[in-house]
Image 1 (cartoon, rainbow, N blue to C red):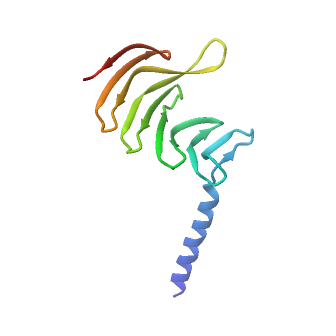
Image 2 (image 1 turned 120 degrees about the vertical axis):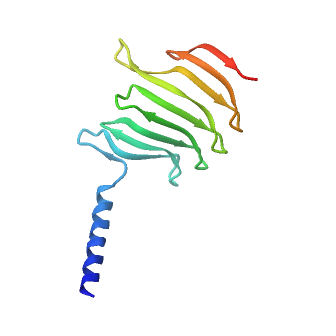
Image 3 (image 1 turned 180 degrees about the vertical axis):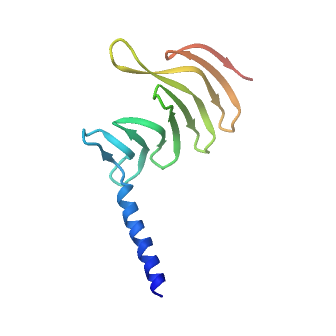
Length: 146
């Protein structure tokens, strides 16, 4: 009996401690967003997007939702944060489009976001309809499939 109470006490303590560690929407000592964050559409708590920050910059995987809570876009940053894999989704959860974007720091010291390379576009039933090739955000070639 004493062993059961001890085990329950330890589990309870770990649960309380764990909840304190995993807080969302934190900032670091410089005021930059840090760790797991959720951004909301409204005060009712409808999630607009969620993911992780490191020193105020988005890192790893981010998910975006419409007002009804359906996933509409996913972004995955590489380790250097210079390439983002992007997928958009239909309401039926099938992929609408996918491709890459590059974050480039140009001469003006401003980070620019460009679509780059092939982007594929699908029908709502998952059939590839078109591929477009981009160079620094400008379309260079497009192929439509029958």
